[in-house]
Image (tube, rainbow, N blue to C red):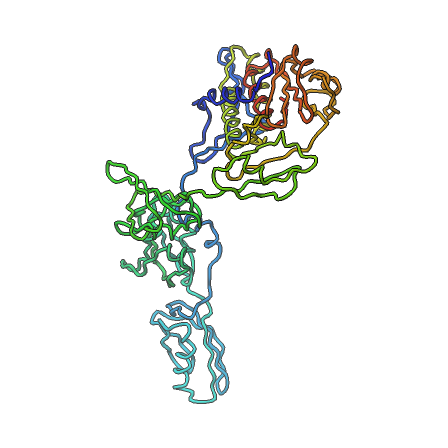
Length: 564
């Protein structure tokens, strides 16, 4: 087989050979993760399967589906319900059952804790009943002082303060996770009682319509968005037997894209403006437009609007908003690394080429301008995506493999354990995203993208040897020496080496595949890297071709040989 630019051919093959994940992958429908399990061999040899034993590492697959969160659902995580507030604010109104600490001194001394009775009075010896029901906490001392001075006109000082709130039992009902009856104090917040009931059910409960019902009538109305967005919360003073009712979820829309976090938000009434929606979730500074998917009735339509018009765009229940940045790119930033003189970043007009960049880069005496390297983020992401898809297919095939006998099933279990470990390591590799540049003048016409990295290598007199050799190292370049000569310098092939799979990587990114008969005649230049890939035992491994494909892909994308 002649040397060839094998990388392009392999990537083309991989792009067309990435089937959909098999349907028998195990998935937990209650969460975002699927746990792979291998069951133990069954008693029936004819049905023995590699699906029959536990994977030692408890391999976990991430489910790519990430549902939009409900705005405000983080509010109820047990922090409010852990402690009660037995103190008072100045606006608190004295209620039946509250305790008042009273101190009199001077001509008459008294220190007592007095309960507010059913008539709303505290009884002060030698003074009589004093009406304190519904008195503001901030006015309590003055109310008591005036009544005491009606009996003791002088030489008696008064100090009165609330000692403790009245214990109450409050029902929490409606669309909460755990409705019931909860103990607390009259001064506790609505949030505390809701938290003790597990919080508003985000799938069915409303954050906008929460009522406190007393004696069959609505005493308070609450909107939790007021608290979340503006920090305001009505001061509810509970009484024994009150009921907190969470009404059903009203109208909702979903907002995602360039926002602080994608959320499902609720609104009252028939509609809301786009401006109101983005004020709830917050948008990033570079957002410019919104794509609105309308889901009204039996029809589905899409609107595309500018955020400058957000205050006049109306949203209805069921709409889905995707905030985007729709801007014309006028300039790009390209990073230059390696052996050169001058700046590390260059701002170029959109559509600039490598030739435009090199005209501004000052070469150093040791710069190898003939073998400049181009690394691109989009290519790295594509390489990572292709590798992940290939690993998913292999993983699915391993878990679905079946055997005809119990002995073969046990062999498949051991094979699955080994491959699972290999897959886990393969997922951790990071592709470089190198774009293969030709060695002729046509490379200067390659158009650059924003964020591209150009690396200028240093002139080298070394050839590196990696992979399945005994002593991986770098060696001084020798004219007319082929890959086999450098492999011998590195101690020769290991027992796991594949003589039919030797790659030569050029600094420019070009890759050649050599077979044993061509190794002595290979064209090796200074700065090249020789990768000796491992051999996969096709007799013992059912999935040897898939593993070889992945090893190739990793070697091409990262320059690293990953052993099985």
